[in-house]
Length: 79
Image 1 (cartoon, one colour):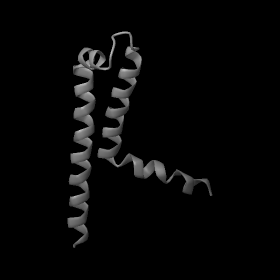
Image 2 (image 1 turned 180 degrees about the vertical axis):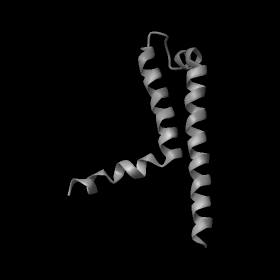
Image 3 (image 1 turned 90 degrees about the vertical axis):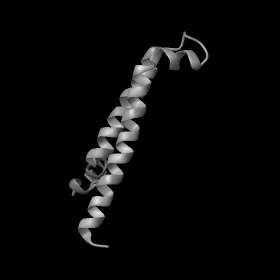
Image 4 (image 1 turned 30 degrees about the horizontal axis):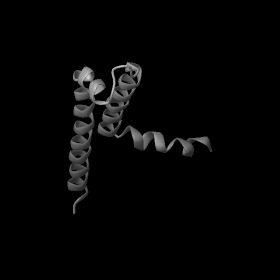
């Protein structure tokens, strides 16, 4: 497989996985009351649902932009 084809395949994969996480985060945010109701009771703290939604959206951005690759290489900068 050519190097350019591999790059395109990895880009498409990152876009698909990033879109999945982004849609899951947006679904959680849009249907927040319904998700709170299905967890058992409405007295669950809403802050945890908002934090989980923020983590999903940040994860989607990180996967799409390949930020995880940059952050995982920080230990090499400490030479």
